[in-house]
Amino acid sequence: MTALTAYDIHASLGMGAGKTSVLHGITLSIAAGEWTSIVGPNGAGKSTLLKCLAGVLPHSGTVTLLDKPMQSLPNRERARQLAWLGQNETSADDLTVWDVAMLGRLPHQAWLAPPSLADKAAVEEALRSTQAWEWRDRALGQLSGGERQRVLLARALAVQAQVLLMDEPLANLDPPHQADWLSVVRALVQQGTTVVSVLHEISMALQAENLVVMDKGRVINQGRCADASTHQALVDVFDGRMAIHAIGDQWVALPVEK
Image 1: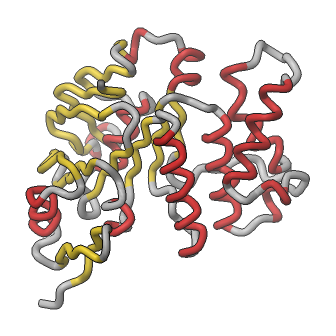
Image 2 (image 1 turned 90 degrees about the horizontal axis):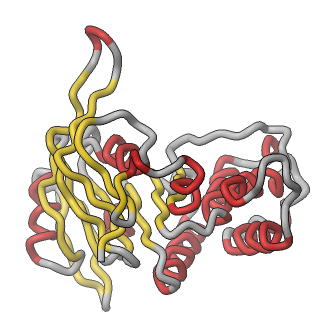
């Protein structure tokens, strides 16, 4: 089964004379209930593709979410089914951590309705899973960059969507909390959630089930993370500056000097 499909996606950034074509006819399918990572060199179009899949960036072509055309879904229904954590996301600094995470429950709430018991339970679960529960009464503006990132992740988790898209979710996270993030992702997949992440950390991306390798606005390869063809595509798009090695039951990317 597929959670997301994209067919012939073209997208541009900028306006007027400064408009630049970024994606060039991308077609791909994202498997349901698995973790797919999108990787590639800087400027490959990774974040732009993720925004198109999330329905937050205008594009040509077709995106389907759970077998329904994205544009046909009412906003509230789409927001329940797909959660989005973008790069450098912000929220009002005077909001408490609890209130920021509760924003993830808005698609489930009636207009101006108070949070239900289910909303509160979902927010508590999300904050605990990101180790942010103890800060629930603190203002977001009092937190460090890494702490804020964990709260914004909790906001996305609180949606309890079937599909979760994350753009550079490890930004500002130290290695222990990167490991915690990995545990959260694996738990989500075990529950049947589809996770799609854009990552610069190639070794972390290789922990996923599937890898989409991009370069210059195109998908160069899509395959299982353990496949030799996937490893070769990674080496090629990074100009041979890395090598993929097996360490125990994991794959890691190590730099190669030239």
